Image (cartoon, rainbow, N blue to C red; front, top):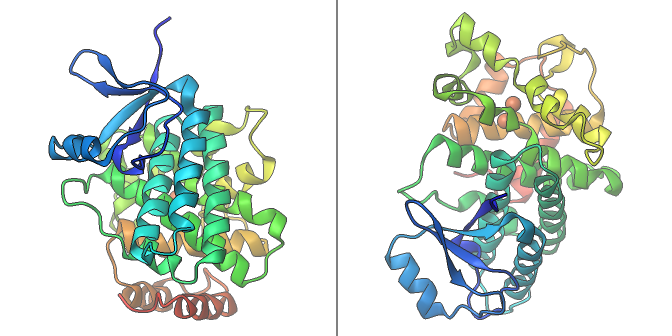
Length: 322
Ligand SMILES: [Fe+2]
Ligand SMILES: [Fe+2]
């Protein structure tokens, strides 16, 4: 059986730390070994790759856990470095989380992706609570110009949603034991995106009002299709599956797929954060436009008190300007 590989972003590989896994370069028809397990990549080698416009390297599937350990190690290096700026910190946290999102979207039903989502959520919880300006930093990161593909936007949406959910859940004093799964919901909620062909992928970047009847029907299937990827897996938490299934539900039965009337506090937090970031990241609206739309077109869909709290939360994180 041939070995399968996982992409890892060059930007997530910190120089001068021992790797612990083999690193491969992709050539048109094969993978070649680029660095052996105990390599320490010097900055000059990383710069050389960057200058050749290499964005991604590959690891063996079986090394996924070792790669995650390496990421944890390099994250804590930067996060504990008193000289690192908040931009540096937001960049490493953002890059490594987006790299996780990429893996989750590429192989949504695999246990390795589930474990990656778990540790990504744990890291976000840990670092967001210890760094006041980190959330703002994550949202201020620009997409690199060469990569504004719909896939990349979805990864960014997944990470932004997870970060917002975690931050807002803590602001709302949600029971700590639930926050990790809530963060994972941010990463997983739209995994069905990967099952759609190019035409229907575009539905994720349009307002519901602008979709044709056909597109709308297809789009409304995504929570259920997402759940189908996970529901028979013994490692997948029941709460996560429930949160994913209900992430497009709205108060008063205005959402989909089941038009549920009432949402738990946790589900309402998740759904508001996801809605907000869809308009911001996927539809490209500004914060004030998103709230204007909520006031005009989403009346009754979200609890007014929760919206008020959400605005307070955004303001306290200096996320009220953009
Ligand atoms: Fe979404
Ligand atoms: Fe969605």
